[in-house]
Image 1 (cartoon, rainbow, N blue to C red):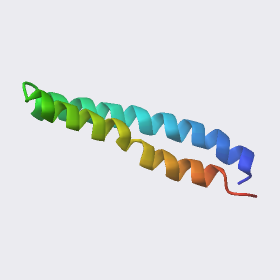
Image 2: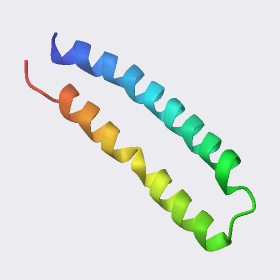
Image 3: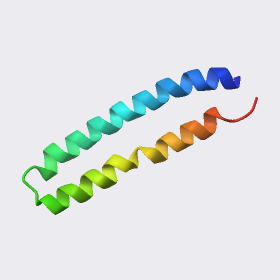
Image 4: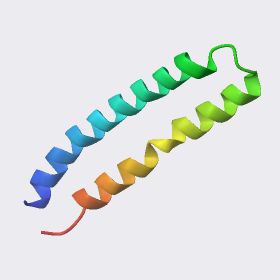
Length: 67
């Protein structure tokens, strides 16, 4: 697979990952955190909001590999 093909696939993989990650975060919030203390919510949203970076780093590293 060429780098150009990996970049095209990586865009769709990243978008799918973000959609799944957002759905998971919404589900976790609605299931367990509705009505929680504001500090708990702040910690959850900061950690979960930055958590998508790690899967994205793997995809970007894979896309950037030379041919």
